Image (cartoon, rainbow, N blue to C red; front, side, top):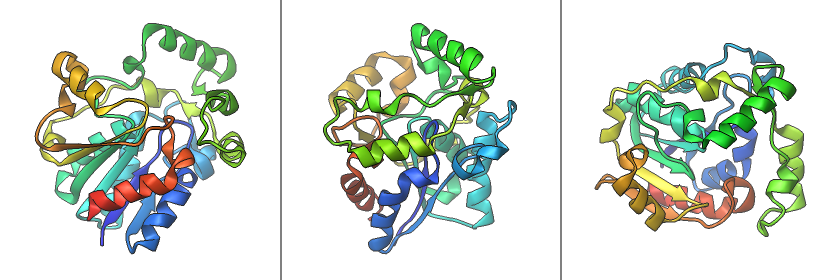
Length: 244
């Protein structure tokens, strides 16, 4: 059986992985869904100085304190940046990296750098005027899901009720990587783009060059960016196969 560590993206916590984690445990796996500092039930720990490094340390601490080895380390969205850096530091404990509708960013790049300029400006405005200058509020989930047939009212209610603002320094601090993580087998689970899209981008865009090579495998799971809410059973099935 396999040990999974599941790291969520912006605004979410371990709760977002619940259906996926339950399905994996029913298959006999050991699963650690993570709530990063300042998120979910740890919202009262959020501070202006909560950074990407804080969240990387959360995952590193879990791996070492639980003495985990041969881990399938899974990151969704922003969580992809966190798991890449944690694996870079503890590559000997990781068997595979899995990126759920995301991918690794190169050394020196931040999550915010990945956004187009207009999105960066819009987020900065939200942080300044609706986030006390240091938090990014959750999005209007009902609007984002309006045209997604897989997302039901219960999922929207859960997202609306449990999401919390994201400490903005987690998005603006650049990641620091040595390259150790690049030797690990990696898996991309693609929801809002295709395998063909990734291959085209990896061939010509430096930001995506890390997503090419013989150590990568890809699976398509067409849905919106948050498949743990729209297609959790299928996501768990893919993860189960990855770990087998």
